[in-house]
Length: 197
Figure (tube, rainbow, N blue to C red):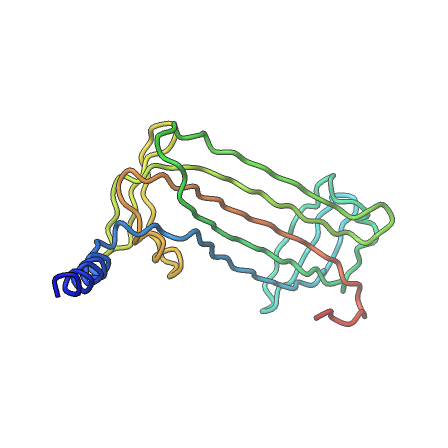
């Protein structure tokens, strides 16, 4: 009879301990969030001498840009051509090992451009990775306070639901690695060419 009671009590105690464990003990799962925006603008004029390009947006708004020396094949760009501009932004977060000094942020970037003889096109991306130490978390305001490797303090208001869930599992002293990725690409579609989907 005593063995039967112990056999029931021990699993019940373990189950109850698991149910009543504080939420802060749960490790946040690495997560990310991102967005992509695409905008198509029309080339109104191209001044080859000054490299100024007048563009019109979807609502007719006008903007002048100067194509720098890195833009190849500008002579092929004509009034009526379309530029398809795609921007991507993403943020990824994960817990990092504690007990080590925080590393200074790292920045990696890359770029591509059209080969000689092709229509102007190009793209670039930048990845910034930083590890911070959490000093406090306010779940009501979705605010995380932290210190950086250089000792400066920072604060982030977390608006994205995926990142809010991650932040809810943080506690003071946790180290978090944050990676920011941003890219932009520009593709020229000649006047008269059907829009690609």
